[in-house]
Image (cartoon, rainbow, N blue to C red):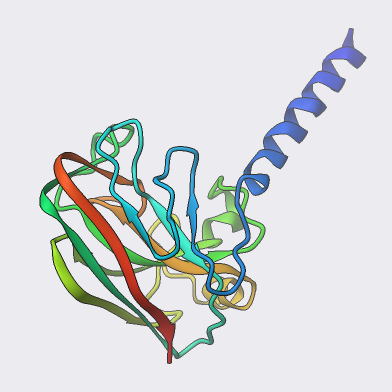
Length: 200
């Protein structure tokens, strides 16, 4: 009985431990990836914001070699008709305004944010409020003393390690409280277009 329980426990551990990374796709240079089972599909450089709370726009990333001290810049356009954004219903404490944040993702993340994994995802604290408009710009220096991890903490060494072993750089959508928990439209329409994404 004890042996059977131990085997079942080991199988459960292996299933949980291996479940995160296999769901995280690795992009090639210039390829954009939408992360999550309910994300809208990014086609080339654009996607339509979902209009159902069962699907939210959250994480989008690509392969982009970068170094500490360089500046990361996203130029984007949002076209549509009177969009009204809302946050993921799975995070009721998140509220408008809907926002966009630059993002760094380290390879090997298990999505738990436990222990060292807290510093496998980083966000720049500067946000852009979502609005219709052409060639809007969100830019941030890759400064390890500014970007924050899963728990909103600065971890300079963790940031440097994440950048040196990056899965990708990109952007996430959230509200006033969370950078990447996702947004959708309660009414109207909106399409997000990436005009350029580069480091200098």
